[in-house]
Each structure stands twice: as C-alpha cells, then as structure tokens.
Length: 452
Ligand SMILES: [Zn+2]
Image 1 (spheres, rainbow, N blue to C red):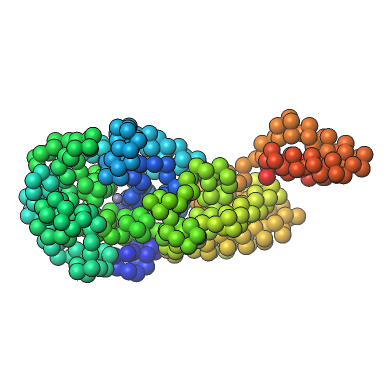
Image 2: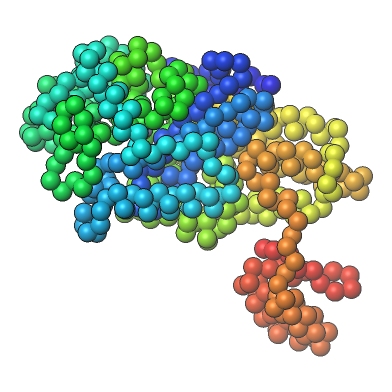
C-alpha cells in the first residue's frame, strides 16, 4: 500500500491521506442539481472521484464513494415553472437522465447516491440541533445559520468575513430583511407561492436550503470526520464553507479530513456554466467522441487545473485511445516482462502523488513503447490491463467485435475494385466503410476490418 497524498483546500497543502480506521476511506463528492441534462463540466467530478476510488481500492483501501443528487433546490423550481411542469417530476426525470448519461461513461456507479428529497427528516433534525445550540435562529418561518457564531468560518475558503456574499438574496428583499446579519444563510425556507413541493417542520411548512442538505446526506452516509470531501472548485464558497460550518456548529467536529476540489472545464476560455448559455451536454459529447475518449480527455489534465474543452483536446484524447487499443491488439494476454515493473510502479506512484493522472498517462505511454518493442519476445498485457483498469479504460483491451455483414460486403467489393485497378471506386468504398465506423486494412491474402 503506497502512501497517498492529496491537496487539501483547508490547509492549502498536499497532505497524507490518513484514514480514521485502518485502510477505510469514505469519499463524499457533491453531485449535480438536477434541473436539466448534465454537461461535460458535471462529468469531471464524477470521473475524478470515481477513478480516485478505483485507485485507492487498487492500493488496498476499502473505499465507500458517495455522490448525492440535489433534487430540491431553487434552480429546479426556476426551471420547472416556465415549463409548466411539477418540479418533483422534472427533478425525477433529470435524475434518470443523469444516471443514464453517467452510466454511458462505463465507470460504474458510486456506492451510494442519496437524494435530498429522501433525507428531509435528518435535515430537519440537523437544523433543530443548530437552533438548540444557538447557531441558528427562526424568523417568520425561515431558519438562518448565524455565521458569526462559528469562530472558524472562512477557514476553508480562506476569505475574510467582510469580503463574503452568500449570493442568496438581493439586499433589501424580504428574506434579506429577516436575517440578523447579511452574512447569514438559509437552512430552512418558508413555503412560498409558486413552489410546489413542501414539507412540515417545527418552524412551519417549507423546504431545506442547499447547504444543509449536503451536511445531512454526507453524515448519513459516512458519519462525521470522514476522509475526503470533494467537489468542483466553484463549490468552495459558499457551499462547502457552509457545510463545514454547519457540522462544526452542530457536532463540534470537522465534517471531513481532506477537502479536495477539481478545477473547472473551460469552454473557449470561459468557465463552463449553463447559465452562460454554453452547451456541451455530456450525452452529446459521448455520442460524438465515444466514452473512452471522453474519459481519456478528462484524465489528460491534472484534476486541480482548469481543463480546456476544445476540438483539439478531444481529438488528442481520441488519438491516444486509438494508440492504446492498437497496442493492445499486438500484446498477448498474460504476464508482462519483469523489466517493465518499474514503469508500472511509476504509473501508480504518480497517482499516489496528488492523483497526478497526466504524469501517469505519460508513463503508461512509455510502457506501451517499450512493451510493443519487445513483442517478438511475447510481451503480455497484464501491466497494461492493471493500469487501464484504474483509469476506467480496461475496455480498450476488449476483443474486437466482428464487423457486421454489410461492412464485410463493402470490403469485399473494395477488394474486387482494387483487383480491377479501379482505385477511385475502391477509395469511395473505403470512405463508406469508415462512415460506418470501421477501418479496412490490406493484409497478406486479403483484408482485415478494425473498429475505428
Ligand atoms: Zn454539496
């Protein structure tokens, strides 16, 4: 088992992963708010934290990965209203889409995926504990967290109180006037006309705020003081700052030991946000490029850095996927040469150092160069299978499916055209074969068909 280090936003340093119990690691990563189809930006935390869990399991840790679904939220009411649809129905539909769209990445699912709408009881209890301990107060059916009651507020995002804006309510709005301090944020929001989901609480009918949902879902799944809390860097403030404050105030302890944040996906240099009108729905990106190229693209940059979303970047990922698939075809199943152990070890060492996937990929490509250089000595693919498994790309070693009959027939007609020296016709047929997703290659005594 390697020592694993991870960058922690709270301490601002790369720190060793130190599990509570021997070799047990709980990871909670904030999942999507389900008001529309998810985009490539939402796929990044899904992939980063999913693959981190795979890597830690490879190292011998027992990992529990939890990714929630935020299905009660202002954004959902705002989206459902203009569509004339019940908000719960829209959220349920988009939750199904989220599951299908992320399933298509081929990485499996987190161990647990709690829904806010199914955690209302524990959320209400959590708020009650905060009120009882004097960290929250009710006001006209709302309940607010008293930010200044938490001495360590700001310690995660490293912001000063005077520079903070919860972004909840416009100054002077009725909700803003109910707050004792503009810094405070909502734990419970009284029912408003136009909101079509509502639950009972000791403070009257209403629904929870976003931040308390995650504190309750995380604690319900992993307890407090678990190993890694993750999410996009856009969540550090206010969402994670508030989650951390709630848990300190209600439980007297920190929610997580390490706060790990992934950088944003950038579309034409801008942070990708649906509100900005940038569109790259995950299911469309997967349809266009294939799941393996999308995963390859997402691991091609270090998780903490912003990652540009561009035609170029996806083409590079596609070429890399193709190169690995080609190499896989040339290697037999079985043991890899022992003198390549050092490269396999360097691959996993890179992942152990703050989950450095681009460095690991560079080592993987080095392994391929050396292994395919010794194919004559019968190099086996065991190392490659092990490395690709942790990246969720083991499918690149799957045996090729036979080409469908119509493609074989096109290839036969092309062979005929070549025999008749009608090369123009042969080229057209090759393009037709390519358009169906296959590549025809001339080999001794005929042709072979490979998936493109
Ligand atoms: Zn969250």
